[in-house]
Image 1 (cartoon, helix red, strand yellow):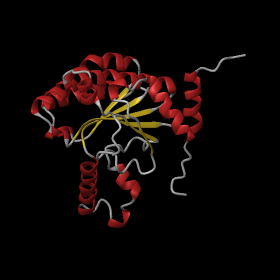
Image 2 (cartoon, rainbow, N blue to C red):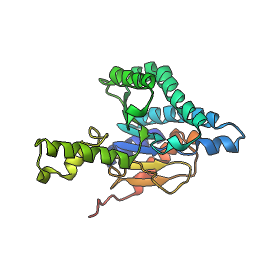
Image 3 (cartoon, rainbow, N blue to C red):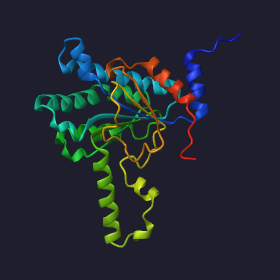
Length: 246
């Protein structure tokens, strides 16, 4: 009798529920480090390892889209040393991991206001997007200098400008049009939103897009969130009955 592995069970769940897109609030890096009497930097570096594991798991399970919250518009209020470290960490991670991610077919995109980042970092990110744009594997969206309210304001201004120039009429403004002017215009809304670290809030993340997403909050800190944790989250998702307001 053939033994069904846990991976195969999760693959079947993803197929049968049409789970395409998982969004994650990667919370708990600093608290994980503090518990271990380590500097925050160690927690953030360990968080990069957890992200790599999540990407591999999504690929194994057949999840097509993964969107992660890496740096919010509010994170600029942290200490300058930590902000500088996070900027450098993103650049170094993309440079160091780009070759492997490209070979694995990952499509890399960034959502957020990247114009506020340093020129060198913008060049690194743009290069990663260009190199991987024709890949066919997991589509990874990294939300960096991202805030959902800022995103919606950006969309509103873009639409208002089109009305002003006569490109569209006011009556042409629909939910679909607004969605098409968001940073996430080319991808489906998340089916599942996971927040690690135990906090019970969405923190200005994908407010428009998660209208009918299933939420799962785990007390596990992000550096300890692994393939098994993602499998458990997908299993829990499978127990939910999505009604979309019906």
